[in-house]
Amino acid sequence: MSHRTALIAGAGIAGPALAYWLHRHDMPATVVERAPGLRAGGQTVDLRGAGRAVARRMGLEAAVRAASTGEAGIRFVDGRGRTRAALPADAFGGQGPVTELEILRGELCRLLHEATREHTAYVFGDEITHLRDDGDRVHVTFRHAADRAFDLLIAADGAGSRTRDLVFGDTTRTRHLGLCTAYLTIPREPRDGRWARWHNATRGRTVTLRPDNQGTTRAHLSFLSPDHGYERLEPAAQVRLLRRVFADVGGEAPRVLAALDSAPDLYVESVAQVLMPRWSHGRVGVLGDAAHCASPLSGMGTSLAFTGAYVLAGELARHAHHRDAFAAYESALRPYVERAQKLPPGVPRIATPRTRAGIRTLNTVLRAAGHPRVSRALGRFLVPPADTFPLPAYGV
Image 1 (cartoon, helix red, strand yellow):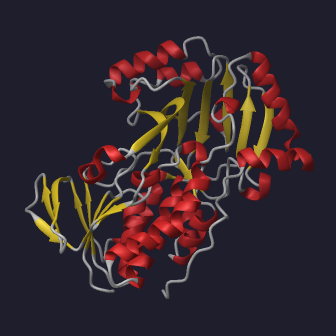
Image 2 (cartoon, helix red, strand yellow):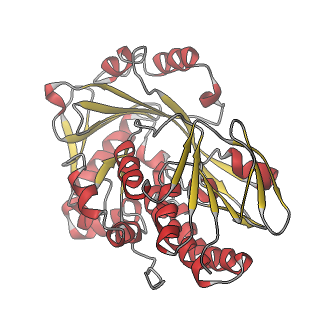
Image 3 (cartoon, one colour):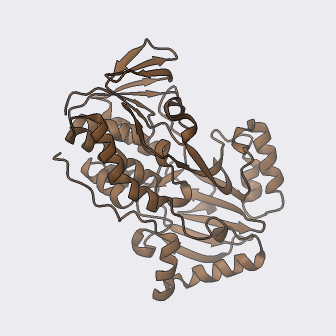
């Protein structure tokens, strides 16, 4: 059914991807984004399997490739910077921890905005504060703009979606994975090169540096921890926490810690998954991380966002009633999501050993990854199930 109007909350990845496909099916979309403009920051993401196939159908694959970070692979290093194991980007058929299509999240958002801005109305610096679904339309109150009504509302504003919570409330469950990660951008140094570097320290702490294509370096500080709500601390308290946890790590840690005060984009999160019993209610649906965040540990978030946007728009075009479209979307996509959310046994602890002996064992196993038998075993842990979803055909 064409000519439905849709309001999409979130101008990240899932929202603009949905706007693209709704336009292809003759359904005009408006995207509202709380930020004053496109979020230029963010770390490296990748496109795999079905998600890459969707990008190809959008005509974006070449642009994504041109904007990629050019990451050559990942090296596992010790506190003195010596390589203990290495996985090139073409390991595991190019579908391992690093793929050939690694791109900064902000760059991917820019490409999606460029592909949709001529036919999609973007409203930045605003958000939905109240909504009412009367069965015929969804009536929306914005923080700043005048009230409006739409045929459909799609929450695509991330794992902490405020829009989703206006409708689904306490039915959404968060599964914390026992890992806290801080992301930031730091000045690039000549030794950084094209390889990512992962340093495991004792007590389940890791320091990771990844190259970008903008003359800087993206850094991660991760440590095993129960959910203590560190993401809700004030930035100064987060900096103190990170300096305390990583004070004795060595290697590149002092360099990253020194950059905390001046980092323009420090972001701390308790790594978690989003679990929802249903992805729709009346005329309201959810998409991407707002519906089913699989966590960065899955390697599947971006691909799920692209694939979900393609399927949701296709089912809305295929079915006359939104209820049937939402049901078909969920029926098609949920098994794929559940495979992505089923992390390998022991993750994240298996990749962040607490002891020196555990770190040595991990590096020994990774060094043996070139052996076919070891590679097959490791593939279970390092290759996400991105290729397990055949894309439906929707006639566009």
